[in-house]
Image (cartoon, rainbow, N blue to C red):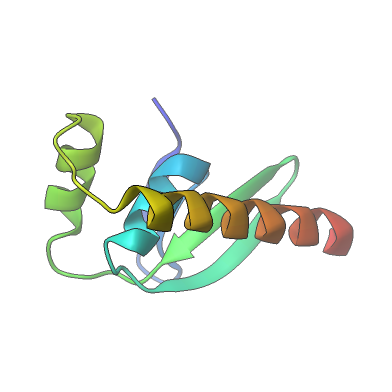
Length: 87
C-alpha cells in the first residue's frame, strides 16, 4: 500500500504519484511538494470527502477523465524531478 499520511499542519500527503494525480483530477487542491530523503510527498489541502475519494481510488471504482489523469501524471513527474534538483 502506498504511503498516505494525514498531518494537521501540513495537510494530506502521499508519495503515490498515481493517487496524487487522481486527487488533482478530482479537484483536491495541491498545496506543496516535499522531499524527505529519497521520497517525494505530494501535499493536498484537507477537504471534505477525501476519505471517499481514497476509498474509490483503492477500490477501483473512481471515474476520472483519462486524458486529464495522464496530464496530471506528467505534471507531477515534472514536480518530482524539480524536487530532485532542489534537494
